[in-house]
Each structure stands twice: as structure tokens, then as C-alpha cells.
Length: 278
Image (cartoon, rainbow, N blue to C red; front, side):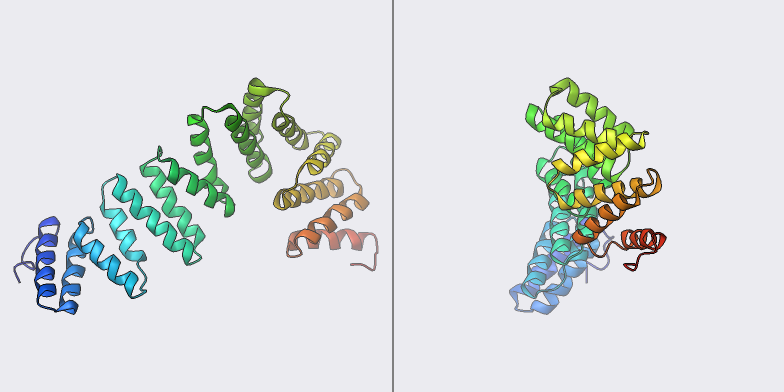
């Protein structure tokens, strides 16, 4: 009863936890659980109620998302809060909520941008989810601390490719190409980014040549689809080469039949040719 009269916060939480321990000692597990719930509500930053409730929830296979979320929000920045965000991210990943997991890891990264484990987990998940606006500043932060030359080359190249293929940011890609040129002008990654920039240039014929060159070099299906879709649109809309556009769109659909915007563009081209394939 004395816990009820205390102001909310650490003092009240400690009182509820003490009551919970007394109930446990007398074998009253359900009442102990209720007390720990009150202790956690009073101050989610307190370790004892969190540890107890987390253990019991996992033992009973209950959802612990609100537990981790409230814990993370209540803790000051530091290792314990980072751990809470990571646990929340793992829980959401296990439940199939990868976007929510990205948000939790992004919060952990904002708290502790020098934490390499959090940074790499966020990079990996954001790339899998193609959450490029989340991925980009984290990749830039990793590059800023990287001292190994080969790793710098890889990161500059990766950021430049994402900037062009996913974000259509020519200025950002150009800056990373300049850095690559200073590091290793003849490296394959530097030549690859040069071809990417050519593919995104103002000259349509040069852009098509750059895209064709990139397609000869890539072995990544998602990148191939993006490049072929762009090349098909270029052939259809600017270069007036419908046969080549049809070829590229058909290749995209062979990789992903559910790209409906490509299917519609292909049907439009075939109708223009009065083809029975439409």
C-alpha cells in the first residue's frame, strides 16, 4: 500500500519491486507479477522489474515489444538503451516487421553513432529493405571512419551506385567518383562509377552506351532490373528504338514478372506495333 502513495518514478518503482519480492517469497507469483508491472510502469529504466517481466514474457511466449520500446525510451543514452533498441529490432525482425526493425536500429545508431555493431546491423537491414534514405547517412558515417584503402574504395563505389541507381542523385555520385579518382583512378570500381555517371548523363546515346556497359559488368539481379528498366525507357521515349526497348522490358519481366509498370510499358509498345503479343 505504501508504494501507491509515492510519486511515480524511481522511488515508487523500487517500492513496488520490494513488494514483488515479498510476494515471491510467500509463493504469490501472480501478485508479484502485478507488482513488477506497476514497478515497470513507474520507471521503465529500473533493471529489476524489466528483467523479471522480460524473463516471464519470453517463458510464456508473450509479445515483449512494448516492454523493450518503453525501456528504450526511458533509459538515458548509453549501452543499456542501445541494447534495448537492438532487442526491439531483433524482435521485430523475427515477427517480419523489418521496417520497424530498421527504425529501432536507426534509433540505436542515433544514440551511439560510433557503435560499429549497430552501424553494420543497420546497414545490412536497410539495404535488404532497400531503405536507401536510412542506409545512405549510415554508409557515409562508416566511410568517414574507415582507414583501409580497399574498404574506402568499396564504400565510395557502393554509395555512388546507390546515389545514381536508387536515388538519382548525380551530384552525390560525382563527389564519390572524384574521391575514387584520387584514390585509384584505374581501379575497376572507379571505371564502373564512371560508366554509371555516363549512363545518367544528358546525352541519350552516351547514356544508353553507359547502361549497356554496366549491364555487361553486373551480376546482381536487382541492379540488372533497375538498369534494364532505365535502358528500356531510354530506348522507348528518347532514342525511338522500340525493338530494343521491347527487348529490355522483356528481360526485366523475365527477372520479375510482377513489375507492372514495365508490363504496361511493354504492352503500350507492342500495341503501337499492332502486335498480337499485346
